[in-house]
Length: 123
Image (cartoon, rainbow, N blue to C red):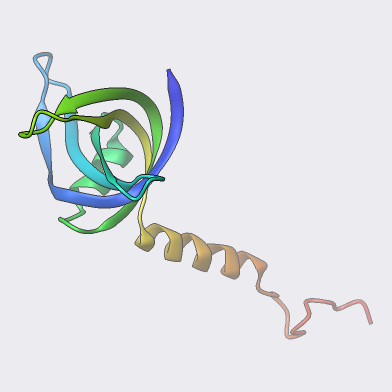
């Protein structure tokens, strides 16, 4: 198993599904830029409540970062050429909204609680 971090744009709309045992999961496709300038499809599946909720809130074209277990794959396009792809079981999903929210939370924690702008009342 390869643990990885992927960044890209959502391709299509993520979909919620039910497994045979009644387990809910979400599937999505993410288009990530490869090192050679070509795009790479990442087939994403998420089982945790948090990751499922974030994926379902996203639309086609939204930027996203995902962390989880990666499996390399190969698929054949309509011209018969082999193309790389990745399958990911996402454990964590991060969006621009999450980054702003976390940044604001850190700034609130770091803000001085007294009237002293430096937070230094030991004069």
